[in-house]
Image (cartoon, rainbow, N blue to C red; front, side):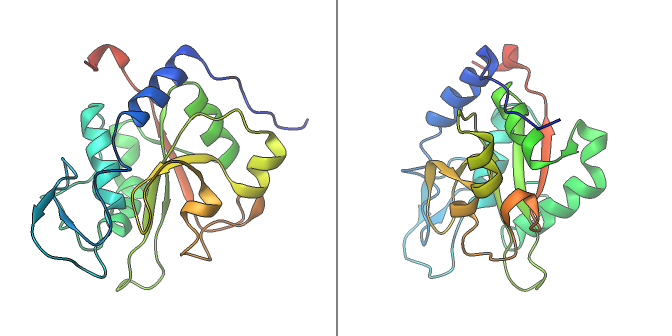
Length: 194
């Protein structure tokens, strides 16, 4: 049986609206020093290597009352790699479930908080993490380019694909989920969200 992409539910629309109001296109900007939770610049200056994918995802999870590793539990440096390990080793205890890339898109469409996370094989280099967002794209497009996502990072985007978002990590996304990205899903209790 050929896999299919489920339609976007009411909770999926709520998730899309939540992500669209994150202001990730204006906050958690690369090369600036930012607060992990607010995404606002918190000290002057510029940093060649400062990107904030893991801070952004941690902030969105906290706003949704979902447990995910964040500062000060772990320093900002290497946080995406540490979040990968935390999700693999501890995520299930806190309601996270590992899923494949098709289920990642389907669950986002149903209003689950789903993350795509890549651990860099070089422990001295950053990994990457992004949030899967609801999408009406075709199964063929998702098999080729990966699920739809919202991210901070070397570039910030409210709406892009996993293949574009993880472009700087060539081992991360390969068509049909053959790369090193792992997807984790957590239900959202929308009654807790203001």
